[in-house]
Length: 415
Image (cartoon, rainbow, N blue to C red; front, top):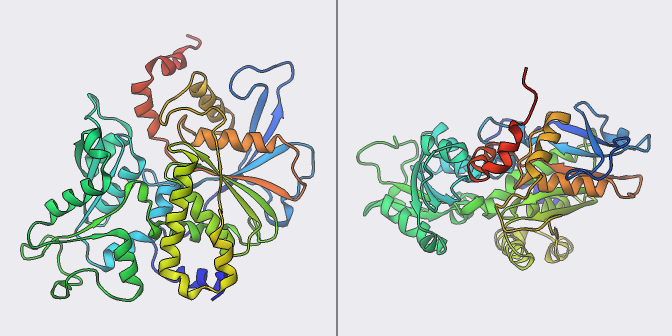
């Protein structure tokens, strides 16, 4: 198969999201007269055009610099951004195999953990979350939602460092003597052949999940949904955006995304290659070194080739073998999760000027990079596009941790 033929085959399946649609906004940058260098964005002001001209009309008709935002943060009140995309192709597979329980892990304020917990609850599945560290004194943000929708266990950091063993051990504890445990990728691979990853005497499609005589079917999902199956939902987004009336297939695009695990960036890059799109994917590194991200990229590509390589022609495989993502340092690098002075105010500035909420850890990093690239001299036929990966509830946890930064927001006029 060619890459495009493979893409059509992969996308011919059931999905979690009823539609791959996402709103696209245009952010226009302009200089503030008389202002010089104050704050994170200096003298830059932002204007949000929520109904921009797309397709062939994306050619810049004036000298204003701009970038576009894919508003995946609007997909679901609690399950949005790239978390929704990663689960888009996975959840129907869980239902097809009559899964009873899902085990995954994440940080205390993990948006991924919340997305899995809420999605499982909506489908009658039990979700078990292993969260790193200690229980906060006050439950808030993603931690609060995870606790409401899922079964939370807090794991010491020393044990959490061995994620594979931690997940496996907890999954077998839940499954008990008569249950079955399978990793997400193994279940995905089995689904492609119409087989079941469970024991042959355990196929009870449609059996009531809470029945006393029903053994537990436990699936392990890696941290951040960094599994090969997570690429499917991102591929679906790429195909949607490549329609002629949106970003199109011929216009050069500099695609910006913030990188936690980096899975979304790899999915964007692979999808662009398969469809022959002139897209360059830049991922802002937040949680690992460049070597760590490249290793994750190689692992995902290797897993994908293991499952689908026999279907691809050699020319397509040659394109996939090289690095498909440009891994970039954040404008102000720091240890993951740390917030620097002035960044909360920058989020406030963006929200008040555009009506778009970004958080200091993830999406502000992508916004910074998109602003930087838009402010440079780009070719007339190149557009900068940022994927909004959600994460708004993370602000609540950050407000607990960085009280001094958020206390500054109280300053205002009293009437």
